[in-house]
Length: 415
Length: 198
Image 1 (cartoon, each protein chain N blue to C red):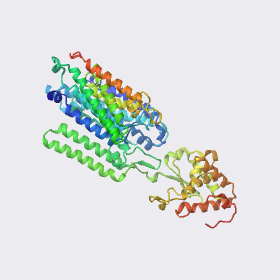
Image 2: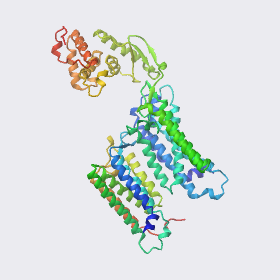
Image 3: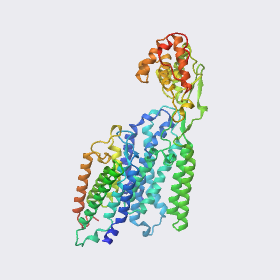
Image 4: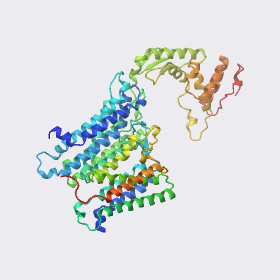
């Protein structure tokens, strides 16, 4: 069939004219969650996968409904059913590619100068999701009368594309529709291969089931075979996805880290290497000031920002003296953790000790004011205050001592 | 009467309607997160407001299932029968939703019923002016378009985007009511001869 006729008489061209500008418009306004890191850009661009796959499924149902109404198989066609279907679905498949690439292009703005390229695994798996929607849409369009199939694929595609990520249980459902990697990625993470594998298994199972049912044979044996293939794909995907829980990220290969200097040793990812001098200089400034205050600076530092600014590097270096998570005694349900109050004032104090300006601090104003008052104490009293309250941070049974009068004398008060 | 009901897939419609009214309170807290062109990814529509699409599409399909020739020589007004079916379905949904709202503490019940009326009205209007098969597709597109352009900053719906409003909104109730009445008028004034060319 002439491709001009194919495009003119099909739904894919109209859908492209509506979908691609909408995707570009939406994506360009929502790049806040991406960092200049290609894995993050690629993973975040899949948030519109639900729209692309819903529209492609609806177009496929449209084509299928037209073919059924034309009753082509009664006209003694010289081409096989599969060939006819592939010809009519080719523009829809192309629409899927354009949709995914349009979203990627719109999200790729921040990462333009960083080394590396988009994660082709993620894009390939997203495309299998789109193709599986096209296949299911083709089946539904044949089965339901007239355009009811299109309506169903539009709404069902939308629900399936966006609802699983909003559900807590079952947590593995989001790894079946391609939404598992929607929270990816910080600099030290990459999309989990398990999540991508589960998505691919499920989509390929659905695609194979539809192919067997429609084009291999329609006797009862083939129904059973195609159902078995679909169920196998589903079960395999669930088995692969279940251990992941809600997370779709895995740790990035640490051999890519490039560590320089010492005191502290600063370890940087390739995306951060352009600003290596800044990271190293400011973390050394923080280290000197912490050492002057009598504290032990961290031995090794890593940062999550790609483009550093002085205040953030100083405060991250300083606050790395605090443990990342509360102690185990605070994590049991119903546990009391009095050290939490201490943590919220030690953060701004540490940051100011490292040289961050008080107006650049992000913590609540009353904690910052209290920390400023602590900074007015003599240096040894500040050190005593820090040591005393760090004990309550590490141990749930010790209450913090936050009254400043207890530290205005240089000697340590017994607890 | 039984033949009329069977020809118009009344059982399918009733089953889908029942399933929708049962699932709506069960999914009352569920939100369908949708990418919105103006409010980023924070937009979301409560699932009970999107569920009435299914019974509305089923009804639109059922009403137009028979070819126009089968009613061409009818003595009774086929259009009035179809409009009457829509009215009966609408009243049933309103009653069931009010009962659910009172007994099951389901605040979105009236909103779901109102959305059903609005979707049905929209579909009937489309079926009057375009071919009958475009009704369900348009109705399916309404909540999607609503999610795309109708959610403003922080995910709150714009005043004119009635499907996304909660139960207490008079604007949305008026919009749905007007659409439903227009749809009924469209169904009643439908000419029985074939309108399409060729």
